Length: 266
Image: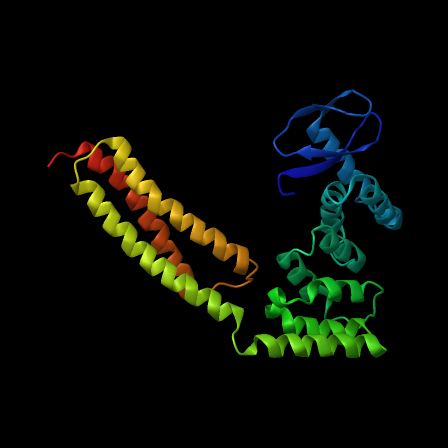
């Protein structure tokens, strides 16, 4: 969704999903030529009016039924920018993002502290209160107490307690970081050794390139698998970040070793 934005056709007033960087397009409904910037500006103007906020939210819901979440999500980003303190807009943005971890954290940070029950609180908790969001447990507890009542409060506090108990023995953050510490250290050592080898050995450039690519592709696969399982971490320790920088530098060394080894003759 990050590669798109929303606009309104100045000719027929229809909402459009626009690819970022596109300057001109043809409206798929009225077939008129449109300047993307004008379409963006038209949408910004419509969704900046406080008096029309209720109708604009209803329009977003109609767009979801008609087009799915991609287009209304982009419209909601405009509404959210113009009305950052409107909780309904924030909730709809969260919902249409597919309960993105970072948008969930932002939503809870901004609204969990306000003691004001909302009709959609149970939906937020059903979709957001899952083990991968365990780092947000304090915010969830605050949200449950301030946004729900009666049996709903009891049910979700119990669910939160069970989630905390299930991960207390082996916190995902510690496991994820430990795995990455090992990977970054071993990967950096391997890459530095590979760089020296590529500079010293005398072989054809194509074989040299293959020797460099094989471990790098393996390392990328390991990173992919790790991100698949632990990719929703909201914080990364400074030590892990430093090792990550070291590892990325070692990849640059490998690439340099391919070319230096091809140019230098011992």
